[in-house]
Length: 490
Image (tube, rainbow, N blue to C red):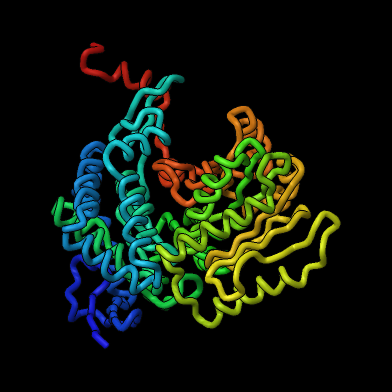
């Protein structure tokens, strides 16, 4: 077996021989990758935090947002170039680390990176700030006076490893609000954040010390003195992961620290009768299968259930058959990653729960497709609650008389709602969107786009940038009081 070694993380001001390194090993298709991740002492973490803060004061915070966007755009241009060494590293090793199909990773990275080009980033900033210039200096307000937005003094990121390159989103957010950042990579995907930080330093050397990428074991109540030292100095923590991990992390932070968690969510789709004729239904099923296939439903926006309306030429049961056929086709192109024992047991348990459910009055619950297929479609004629599947391309299709009947069912999971995919007429889209928004849904997308959020989307219904900043106001009274003190007032 061929073995290669990569050093992960990004530690400005620290040499490799000063740091203790932990080895993480990954194997796939006869290839073994050993990733060395840095383990810092409390003193080293404190020094690192002070270094990135000082560098941000000197370099990052003196740049305009337009200049920062230009730098990020140049980094992204390199990541989109499949001949660039970092992009080649990503295409080579992210499939090994994540286990995902190499072509899935390649296409996923390209689609993802395109949302961070300059035009998209300008929209991103404009989405959160009516006047983006507030990030550069004090701007007049309609009520009188002036206002400016300041980013965190130190922004700490805690990333999950379920989706490759997930770290890019929050790193870009931090840069746009001019925040020095230190990110903790996940053991499941320790590579991309360090690559991005190095590219950023290469493209614009003054920013070389404004970011750092570290690691420790665990994300919630683990990490030891190094983690405690970092959290004690952060005024904002942005974290991704399971709800239990996020709860443990919240409890270890000082009460004055702003905590922005992104945990487990449940996605679902609504497919109206208008989308279910012999021409449209196969197309919608193909798009729905892509949403299920992308990263094996590991994203918070991935679907677990498709509710399909009766009354169209294609029945909900026939739509489930179309979906199963499309998942089978995608498996031949993008093979599902190999599951470990725990993941395989979860899929088997979910399939078994479907098989054991009692028949309904209108029909019966059933699994479509071969028992050994690396995907599963469960069909039911009875209205089922929104509940998580086992992931890894397991999906439920539920036939319903009216899409309106689904709203109270999904509303019961309000705390976990985020993305709904809809295939319906324009009138139905807006009517259903109104109902779903009131029920707790924060993002409505086309079927096929559920797992590809647009640039600037409001993650979990919140503002990506506004939530990171604090606003400083100069009230009109201060302006008025200053006038008599001007040299020209004599």
